[in-house]
Amino acid sequence: MAAVGWRRSWLAAARKRVFDWLAASRARVRSATRSSSVMFMRSERFIASRIDVDENTIRNYRTALKKVCATFGTRDPATLTVDDVADWVATLAETMKPGTVQLYLLVFRLLLDYVG
Image (cartoon, one colour):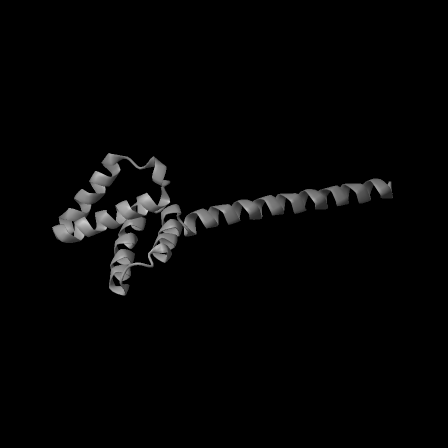
């Protein structure tokens, strides 16, 4: 009888370890998905690849990319539609000057070209 009890407790402990491991793995995936977006990770690589531009331009790119990532940060670039971008541009145009909107759209296009 003691051997059976030992097996049950060992099996229960093994199940608990597997369950805890799965729960932790899922939590890591959810946390990574929330904290680091697809666009944001790619935008950092994009900035690092821009070795041919002035420091002020990099600063402008970072500002524009913050707006891009705030709207499209969790989206896969392949799922973006023309309407999504047009709505974003219209939203920007409500509060920004046309030159600023044009700059943000240019940087967004450069980023999309970079990510392929």
